[in-house]
Length: 368
Image (tube, rainbow, N blue to C red; front, side, top):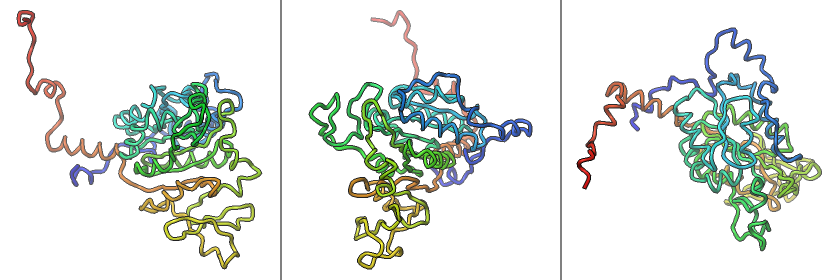
């Protein structure tokens, strides 16, 4: 990539700049509600599944983006989460296992004006599709990747997934899994995702706000949703998400605010050397000024990575936007590079390209 190519601004609209519409169509757009994004398909998830909440919050935030339904695409892989595009009244693909990010990358490269969402599960994203997820984030493809994490393969009835805890007994690990679980947020940060967040299916208001933030981000937005599979892994997150305990066991991140938690907000996170520690305000001279302040826009990912490693029971589980930084997107750079190439060499000729190398024709008489 040349400096000239990078400096050339893209001309295609982005999710921060919805496509220009006529006044009449704009008036119609402003009247869209959640119901306009509900498809006529029967929802076929198990009763009580956390997927219902994620679907509802996704449909609720769609009108806020100012995009026509025809310019929004949902792409999924395989798994229970993979059915979500059926239930959105938008365009969509239900692709093969783990490949949703590849389809999304190609679509976004060809149509930068579309808002593209990728729906995936912990097995689909981190096992079968791990390679594709990594590189879509590394490239900063402008897609909104929502990963449903229930720590199990639910569609295939209960095998251990990459996020299943060590020692977890499942149908595929009857004596307990011996594999250490992946920390999804750490993976996203290591892959250079420019937006990394976490929410919970049962915390509907927080989930809705988090999805809206992801949708407005320009670049790779990775959101992990802690989701309950009440059939094959019921209560996977209950120890810190239940209403009775969540204030004391979860840390709700807010940009520019100290990392305080607890029913009385009297506990916080302090840095001790290179490690976080939980401290109590007023004990041993600890004051609010000693508490770490969350900076989701920090360019260096060190503290964000630290947050991604904090987990119950040693720490409160952080939820919210962990990182939100700006970087040129893949489609911006691609458009600029293509424009620079056309300016230097003229319009391409596909037929000439295909026949430009050494070619030959095999005639029947040439066969031995």
